[in-house]
Amino acid sequence: LLEDTPVHQIVSQLLTLSEAVEDEPYKVLIVEDSKTATKLTQQALNEHQIVTRAIAAPQGVLSELAAFQPDLILMDMHMPGCTGVEAARVIRQHQQYLSIPIVYLSSETDVALQIEALRIGGDLFLTKPFNPVFLNAIVKSTVERYRALRWSMYRDSLTGLHNHTSTKVAIEASMLQCKQAGSPMSVIMIDIDHFKQVNDRYGHPVGDQVIRSLAWLLRRRLRKTDVVGRYGGEEFLLGLPGVNADQAHQILDKIRVDFGRLQHPEGSSFFHTTFSGGIADCKITDHIDGLINAADAALYQAKHAGRNCLKI
Ligand code: GH3
Ligand code: MG
Ligand code: MG
Ligand code: MG
Ligand code: MG
Image (tube, rainbow, N blue to C red; front, side, top):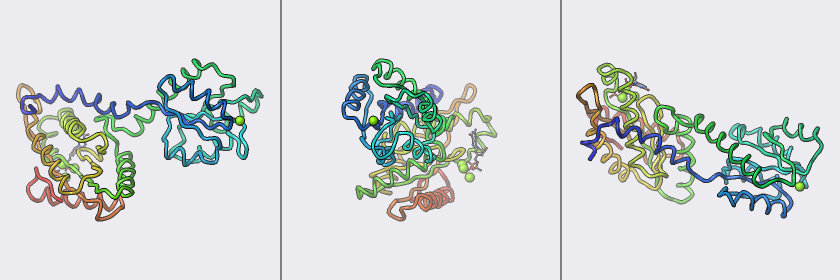
């Protein structure tokens, strides 16, 4: 099938594939001490397929943010022990939560206090009782914009894959899960062979298309739970949870063969290109940088062995 597929037809599917990863229901964390208010808010949002989680005390907000990974926080002002404004201040002290939208939903009508709450790190101030239709519209448009922002922060614009930093973060998270579950995991570094020659012969834009075609093939062949990232120019870093080095070798070798068969269009003709890969097993170390080094060393062996192959 791949032998007959011109690359320019398949790369157009690339962005659609990577966008599907973000195509998850919106998640809202509700911080609210009143059970009645929580129930009303949850009803209003759940009706519109927005997933909610609620906590009654702001003290647990950081661990809840880490566990639930919400797209937006609905924050009450007055709660026992700690106010919503104090909770917002703590949230904003953490780099990874600098841009998460915080929408106050409170009965507080004092405009000076409302403004103070916004100054501390809130994005919007809504007063109770709220109009459910209006609340939904606010939540949806705010989350949509936040997701678009996140996308551009964490994704590589050429391929739609994780960018350098996001790749490492995603692999680290996956490693932690595998460690807790006692399951294996592999990290793989891939590098296109003689890519300089591709650029020199056919030009940079054609080289870009080759990079996109490999991104497409990797995303297409690997599972949704596998991390696929563009680590650098023509280098990709993969994290395969639940897969040991030998299994990763089998999986990647099929992809390697298929990549070599892709017909990259150039004028009225086409050319072929290959990649090499290095595989590291997570059991050798649980530090991401150590694993990347091991995968890199194995990649060096693959290049040394003549390229278009994989080494563990
Ligand atoms: P090797 O088989 O040893 O990997 O040879 P190579 O030529 O692929 O190795 P090298 O790392 O020396 O060259 C990589 C080239 O990739 C150099 C750089 O110009 C090119 N490159 C890096 N990023 C991009 C990009 O985004 N687009 C294009 N078209 N080329 C890129
Ligand atoms: Mg309250
Ligand atoms: Mg390289
Ligand atoms: Mg290369
Ligand atoms: Mg090189």
